[in-house]
Length: 175
Image 1: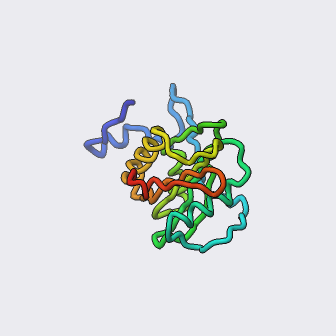
Image 2: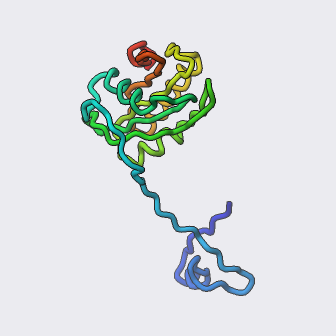
Image 3: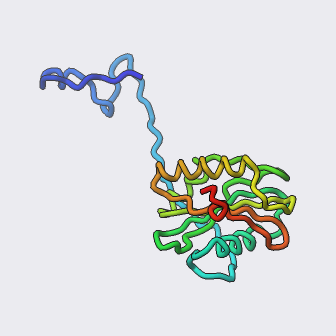
């Protein structure tokens, strides 16, 4: 990448073309994309719980309701305000029977747009066993580190099994 040095005198400033002036001989006009970034609400889901997450159980109930009947692994992000009020839930990734892709960029994209102060991530294990794998622990630590950089705290990572079973990585001491 090449940057043009700033002119050191008014005469030099007059001699250098502006980026937004009509092109001179030999230069072609370039178009610069202009973007608008916005969060779009896709709807609402019924949830029999509080509007504030006070305990891991609250998040587990919400995730269980949201992911009921899923036959593949889903990773979801729950965005919270600074008082742990629910801002919204976002499906980050839908994977295969036993795994899903997890990128901190994708997890925190919606959190940033929600102006979330903190997040809780959750995913289901279609096998029914909510015990965390080594990969589950590693991903939680990567998300925790990414959240620290972004000033969005990863409050917990919940793994859902069958028959109402779930595990909180915060309660296990992983986070």
